[in-house]
Image (cartoon, rainbow, N blue to C red; front, side, top):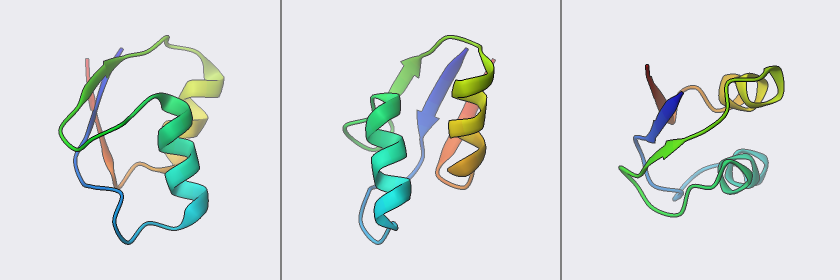
Length: 55
């Protein structure tokens, strides 16, 4: 599964910022390939306004 960070880290709550860092994001518009498992889906759900899922 591929995910893309739509926005920068500026103005995010610290919990959301840590979640995105744990997913591996470092900069806006970065696309990552992650495993499709329940823990990753839960992390994506917490920051769904900042990321876009590319199937």
